[in-house]
Image (cartoon, rainbow, N blue to C red; front, side, top):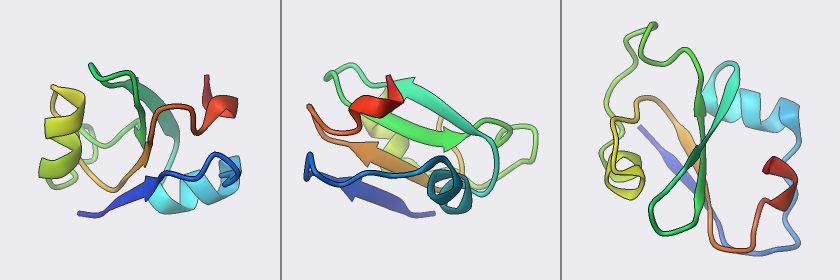
Length: 78
């Protein structure tokens, strides 16, 4: 599984790009360190493979591809 890391505040990810990256509907997951992940909302139901790196960041089980926004990035995603 892949983790796309966004560290530039100028980078904008559209809904369609996010959906293409995670492979479906997008869910925002807030990480304990104040960063955000975009994940596949139905990933568990679809039995997607474990994303170990995203799981460590989130402190909870994350499956499938994910997008990680560093602090201050991805403000349009809440």
